[in-house]
Amino acid sequence: TCWPVLCQFFLQPLLQTQSESKFFPFVIDISLLLFQVYEENDYRRVRFVGRQKEVNENFAIDLIAEQQVNEVESRVIFCDGGGGALGHPKVYINLDKDTKTGTCGYCGLQYKQKHHH
Image (cartoon, rainbow, N blue to C red; front, top):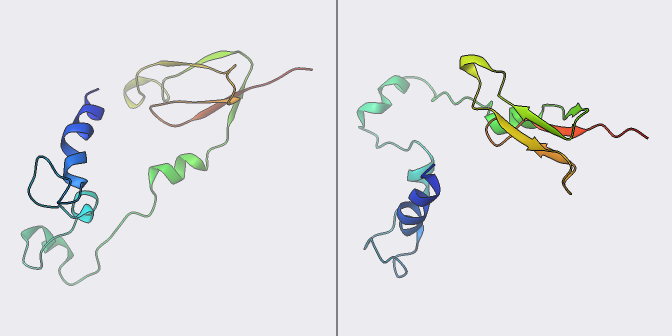
C-alpha cells in the first residue's frame, strides 16, 4: 500500500514544529488529526445537540488483545480472517521464528506452534 509514503511526505511535515517545517509555515494541532474536534457552531455537531457525545469504548486493538493465542500443529499456517466476504486476503505466517508467536498483519490474531516433547 502507499500508506507509509503518505505518512512520510504528508503527515510528518504537518506534525513538525513551526521552525522545523519545510513544507508548511504553520503548525497543526495533533488533536485535530486524531480526534473529531468541531467548532461550537459546526453543523456536524447537530447530532449531539441536547445530549452527550457518544463514543464507542470497544476499540479494536483492545478487543483483539483479549483473544487467546491459537495453538496449531504446523510450522506454517495461513490466516484469512474467517474467509468469505468478511475475511481478508490469505496470508501465510511462519511460526518457527524467535518470537515464538506469529501475528496476522490484517486482523491481529496470534498463532503459536504446539511443541511435542
